[in-house]
Image (cartoon, rainbow, N blue to C red; front, side):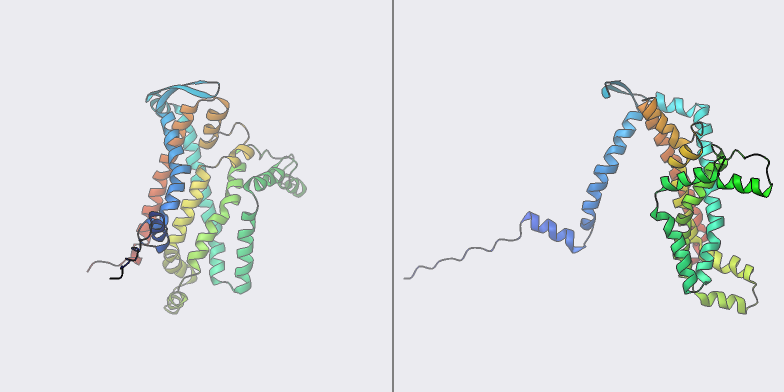
Length: 310
């Protein structure tokens, strides 16, 4: 009788092949696993280490931590220190003022983009994106030239006879506010443009046909439809303005203190890592609180877009 040779069993895919198939199949959470791993490594773990410094007394020798014990002293001291309250109040006021001015200046530009022709849209888009191609530090240094004692602004005021001597603009709150608005204005315009360019023009035509004025149409039709863009732009501009370091440091001078510059001085100059960690925690918590309020306000003003229960 002839020998019957059994064929080898076909082995299934290995663990590596299964994992790769799950990552590429687009099912469940698997496609996001690489991004989650990178986020944990570069953001979550460093943030946890930073928080551990804020809730502990540490002893540093030759740039290394030699002892670390749990403590809430740094947090309680920060909450009871009037300097912290004054600094965060200034930072919050600066960020809110920047956000409001960016909305005030950016909304007409986005509206002109929505109602303008093809060439008007191209020009607005180029002028909006072009500043983003230049570093914020370079744009901030440009304001040093413009607002300086012998800068363009003072030169124009002197030539026009508005002032007799150069104004002191640099190293003031107004210089910081001007620089912040100019640098963050494109971040407000782009979300507004993205939302307003998708408006249904038939609603605007219907409003005008029913006798509404342009201002009435803007108030009752265009502005409510652009609420998502306003919320997105406000959140982005506020976050960037509230946590910025370069603009206050350069345009405000060494005496202008906000939350970001306070963290820099505590960590770099004073080597008070625990205080810097607590200040960073307070900065993050207050920023998230304002973002939640912006989100709630946006949801309220866009409630008409959601279906209602019968």
